[in-house]
Amino acid sequence: MLLRTRQEIPSSEITSQSVMREFQRNRRQFLAGLGTMAGAAMLPRTMFAATKLNASPTKYNLGDITPQSKVTSYNNFIEFGPDKSDPERNAQSMHVRPWTIQVDGLVKQKKTIDIDTLMKLRPIEQRVYRFRCVEGWSMVVPWDGFSLGEFLKTLDPLPSAKFVQFFTLHDPKQMPGVNSSGVGPQGYSEGLRMDEAMHPLTLMTFGSYGETLANQQGAPIRIIVPWKYGFKSPKSIVRIRFVDKQPETTWNDLNAPAYGFYSNVNPSVAPWRSQERERVLGSGFLPKIVGTQPFNGYGNEVAHLYAGMDLRVNY
Ligand SMILES: Nc1nc2c(c(=O)[nH]1)N[C@H]1C(S)=C(S)[C@@H](COP(=O)(O)O)O[C@H]1N2
Ligand SMILES: [Mo]
Image 1 (cartoon, rainbow, N blue to C red):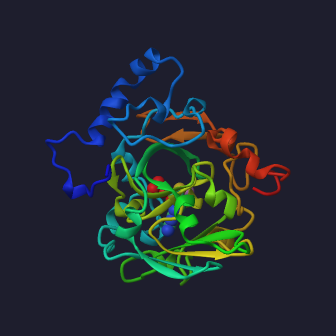
Image 2 (image 1 turned 45 degrees about the horizontal axis):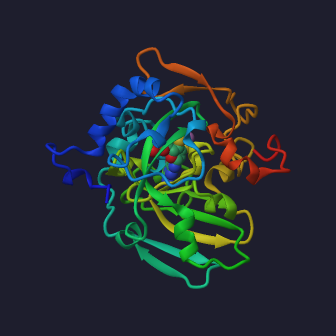
């Protein structure tokens, strides 16, 4: 398995992390040499488990991989405090073992799954994804996990299940910011339509950069939905529920006009601020600003999910 816990990695060994650094250094030459190939497709099999997507990664304009140190020190995890540096400081005491995920709602059989069992269900792949926060920043991260749909299929949801709901751990003893965060006692919750949850790009995520997730990133398990704004990617999940109606979600409850249920990345809709441009995290002293792409650049893969919907209304 590619993924290691952070303590387990001997510094002498070539980890995918150092491969990644090398990759970053060589990326431009590499790209020049390989024409238009970009992203995960160009990584030889010996470096990472292959990305099994029908989509051709050449269509993604991924940009450079964001430095891991930036990705683990500039976080949104409101249960640990409101500032970007709070989660790194405050999340270290969160207990990520033992950890179970409760599965309930419209499913053949309700159950509770242990995280270590879940991680062995499928081979863990590394996917390099763009990630865009509605606050206007973006990053490019190699996430480690497998398609959420592969897991959901094993649960036999009932035909009446039309949406999936996710809940984050809610433990005021471990989460110093949770009581003042506006997150209710059921925990941070998010939801996806069934077809969005089943889409092969939607990643059940256990790690990044070849290591298990840092607590501030949502250890030991989170969801990554790369074509939606970051708040649709819930962290530290303890419960998955299948439901028949569009579920309530934390941010939509707090401020519905600003945080739509769909929240697909859309540069032409400005619910509370312009989404036309984004600041590339870790891009240097003078930050790089680039244009935001519809569906965060994944339109070829996901636009069909929204055929016939007015995305200026259903944002
Ligand atoms: N439980 C929980 N999940 C969460 C959040 C949160 O505050 N709590 N913030 C969301 C937002 S707004 C973003 S942008 C991403 C940030 O993920 P990162 O810190 O790994 O970059 O996590 C999302 N998932
Ligand atoms: Mo965000």
